[in-house]
Image (tube, rainbow, N blue to C red):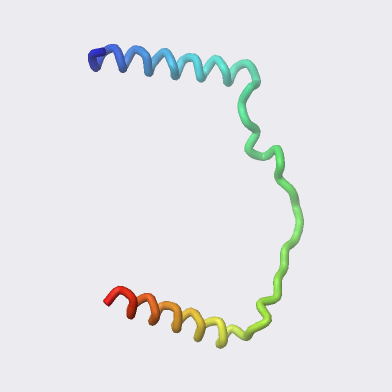
Length: 65
């Protein structure tokens, strides 16, 4: 199969994909959209979380050495 053959088959595939879109078989990206609210409680203060993050970063740097 030469390079030209690939180009032709790719073009045919894209044309077929376009035909599929015309028949309504496309995916609606907003089909499952919803409006709502999410919340969570970390159970720790921001300072505690930042301290834990810094500890994890320090551990990663130690592992790399």
